[in-house]
Image (cartoon, rainbow, N blue to C red; front, side):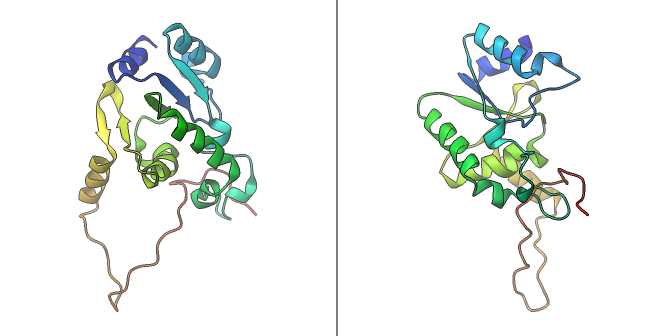
Length: 178
């Protein structure tokens, strides 16, 4: 926890927004919701849980497709998500905010694929705090992904754009529906 708090302090974070749907971990109990909130408060930081509003595993089945993927377009259009996003947007006017989820690597995390994408659409600059406290900008992350893909977009036979993939989670979030 001390290392985590030092990273937050180094980046002048004043509010930690927990966006985990289930703010518990069996591996690092100090990151469970209550101990984490207490540690933040003891360090003079604010803790806000928005996992119900911005979490990557909502309970509402209508947010999932038939293959069990979370449809981010459906979540982003929901009143619940809009309420949580509104709280973040108003918070960044007065605080330095870090959104926390369970994954260190933002590549396949809903924190990036859902929340950061909508924040970017609202003109918010997004950076990712990586292990050890290093910062990776969203633009650097996109550039790295393009390099690993070879940077080439496959065209169709008639040079039309490919049909855009649905905006959804990187992996199924629930068991496949029958």
